[in-house]
Length: 202
Length: 169
Image (cartoon, rainbow over all chains, first blue to last red; front, side):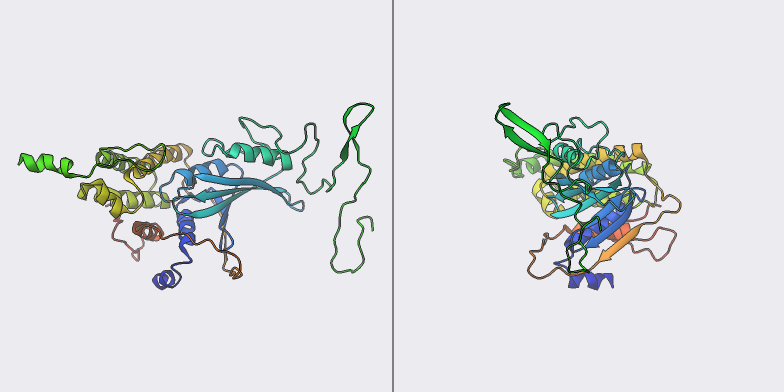
């Protein structure tokens, strides 16, 4: 039955083979959820292991993923471990992509993956800047996309869309000053069941 | 007699360049590969038996070692293994050795108790207008390795034995 499956979908399923192979060969301790779909294969792991899993994926002969495309943080406020750090990887030799996800708190620190993937330096800085998930022993952890002296982490769901401060050029002082924002915005709440515009304070 | 011994390396085509920046041509690639693969096979003994990793490494290393020992010229080796140039194969073998050293250090073998792994098989088709990523064909031996890895452990008699992997007696 397996043979026919392979023959019929030969052209479409090649990406899945690399994924299935990686499922069989990675040590079980490292992954606790795997999804295989046409929309993108991903594997979930615990906080201690992303460095090891990524080293494995990089160096092993049949899963040569040597390019780290992106690392981003996703905020799910309803979960206990609210952030999810997603590593997107690409294998140029086998032309396949894979996603590795870890979940983290506000205070959990992730191991940096800079030694196998040098480009991850910037991605990790962005994750730190935007969502506040920091790395242990990161070689260079600074802000990368926010303004100097910005407080807060923009991509968290509790920071409003327009932020808390606004900047304007002040002519008497001849410099740019930042002041609390004049246009406040409440937490936006959408309820598609009702046709009237909803407000968060009821 | 001397002609046969010396004519081999002389008649072989000399590789001018790998075409890849930073990768130099290795003239004695075959010997380097054979030594690396034998070292890999020795190192992988420290991995516990029944681990998918060990089965996979043994399977493809043995196949590649066999190909290298049978074929004399780098061009034939490249064509038969089907996984890029010999210099790339050397790099892969070295990386595998590095990886094995690290794995033995981390020691992640065995399945912890109460281990649950959620496998989601999402076969929802992508809408037709979305460009789909179609990767190219994989080398032949990849499928053999996949079968070797998916085969049941030796205790079970219904193990599917592919032609590459033979359980060590």
